[in-house]
Length: 303
Image: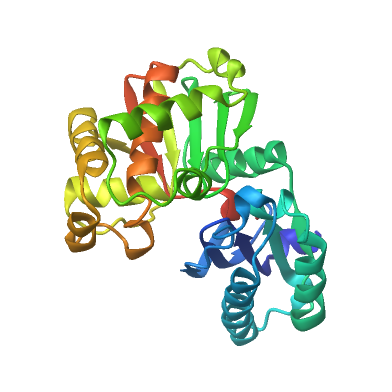
């Protein structure tokens, strides 16, 4: 019997383009038990992602978030060597990523893995697989700040993956930080999605679309007017109600989003972009059902 059979304490820090996530868990070979999870709105890609850099202000926010996370890890008796730190779109495209990685190593002792879009998609699949059996073919969609991943999978595993640079922060900054979305702006954003190298999307057809946590959690809460609870299973979103909240989000003003009690603070600014992207994906994938999984990259990293 090796140590993975006995169980180990692990922590994952998912350094996303918008949000940094921390997950602390007891991990066995075939399962894990979450002990603690939290997130911080770092906005790592704000002010620099479309120029392929991490701004000084974003680096400072990242250090504050990781300082909090490492304090939590210490409380759970997890040392830096047992922290899995993963960097995604903002970091893999940043010319000064080496500086960021070196500073995190110097200050906190953690080694950051900056992963490719394909590797990110594989982690996402592993995370969602904790919650879904893929008895029927499905497409997973993970909306990030810098990129969005699509994974075509069934009970035999992954068939195809694509990572597109259409994350909500990247799009929001590209279109000059809009507060409202006119019909003309919506058309421009949809055209921007179509201009990405997404010819491979023709291969992504399934009756089921699975949204991997993130923005999908907010749309769940808007539909059901109740807090999303991350039970280890997928939950179906009623299509008519989903379309209603997507359309409302796209048509809403910043003031209306600010006042909406079921929109998480970190999503109030860029939620229309996420809504447009989901509607775009539903049309591309031609799905009939939309499910939401509570798990994504950080849970996949525990596999």
